[in-house]
Amino acid sequence: MVNLICGQNEVEIINSLAERLKNYATVKQETEITLKKQKLPVYSFSFGESKEDQPCLIFVGGVHGLELIGSQLVVSYLTSLSNMLEWDQVFRMQLMKMKLIFYPCANPGGLVNNTRSNPSGIDIMRNAPLDGKNIPFYHLHSGQRYSKYLPWYRGKKKKEMEPESQALCRFIRREAFTSPVSLIVDIHSGFGVRDRIWFPYAYSKKVYPRLAEMVKFTELLQKSFPQNIYKIEPQCLNYRTHGDLWDFLFLEHVDKFDKGNIFLPLCLELGSWSWIRKNPLQIFSNKGPFHPVVPHRHKRILRRHLYFFDFLMRLVISHKNWLSISDSDRKELESKGQVRWYQRYNK
Ligand SMILES: [Zn+2]
Image (cartoon, rainbow, N blue to C red; front, side, top):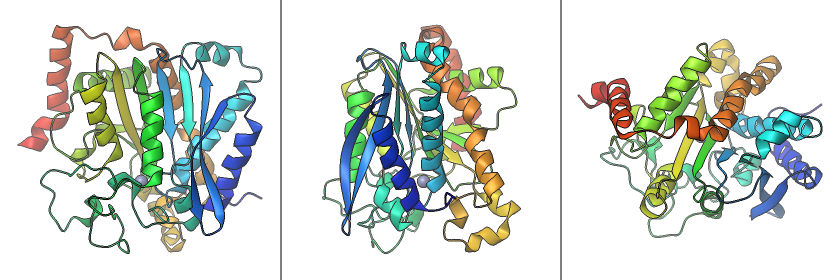
């Protein structure tokens, strides 16, 4: 029986997928991490048209090694779709209109070690050279430079980014930056009782420049699936962080590539506190705070988001129907976004 809470097991599943899917997908080794004597490749799996002008959808998992369920969710969806590719004509037609890419484990050393950080003790999602604004020094969870033996360590100030962070940035620049529209979902677990979709910024309370697009995204999800479970908001409404890779990449994209291209990075933060509420004893399990350890709950998490992932695919293919926003509509959407997310917060 497959062990549901073993990171080593998950890494082996991804390695075997890389072998099994090489005739169906473009499988690339993005980097390789060495952990003691073990070589741990980081893979991407790309389906569909690889032309630069195709819109793209990317799923990322395993940035934080402790949050195994994020990686498992990406792998589970990747496995389902690759099995469907053998017979599903609708899915094959969808792939003629987009690139669909999976990056199931950004931090395999963390997954194997059962740590949030990479094997050097550095938190990948606090590792970018970008300082948060007005973050009190005692907010260690926002990223700290005191010690690698404490969580949320950012790494030394002038040192280059970690190999895992560099590989993820390189991959995103190559696959997403030149697309007319790219939507990215990076899956985590740990904060709150609800499943949340966070958009930038994490480093600042500044209003997100793609506010109109996020209002449209929210309205379309609500209209299409009124019973959806997600709370959508900028990350800074909950807490701010230093070194967020998605903020860093978003700002770089605005700076260098934003000639009408739309780059929308999102984090799906699974509300793991509800799993603890239902099963308080799991707090004593090694992955308990971040992982659904009860088998039926684990299965439920793996199927709970499928309609949302399918919705994202449709959004990306149909981007011209909702992302061509006129100036007057943009103003209206931005003021709705201000009221919805920022006004109360900035008072
Ligand atoms: Zn995380």
